[in-house]
Image (tube, rainbow, N blue to C red):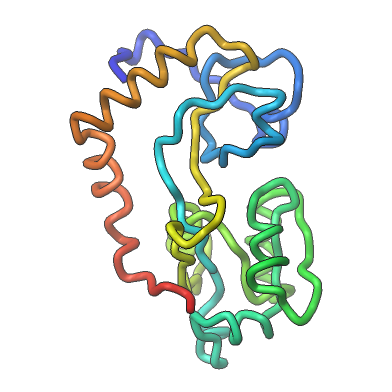
Length: 202
């Protein structure tokens, strides 16, 4: 976006902390935040910079046990979801599993539950699923992805800013320029090209 390394001060904040009302310790926050109407009431979002498919992450033993990228197969799995993400309504409404999903407070706890064999599957946005399966799990598998174009409200990521931020217009202008120049598409192709082999869930 044109900023030099010496022009940026990095701070840490939790996912939930950043989307709560009140003062922030940052000007701009990128943690793969899905833009939702509820969140937009207390923070500002940039224009969407990525439409993320939801993807099912599981383990090799579950796949070897017969799990397939179909809704019928997914219904029989034991699910874990993060309460504060958009995964919970997708699991409940689209997959409608036979057993109620276990609810966790963050991705790390969902991953730990899968490692411990407490759950069979979890729903993440595709970039998170790919990273978690490849880096954080020893036997992680991205079983399939939902078609984002088929979703009534596709999961779109936006940069998060404090409510009423004067930077919003500038950030939106920068994103628009990156889209028109093709740079945003180049970034997506470079970092998400691994996703091409993940089948669609039917």
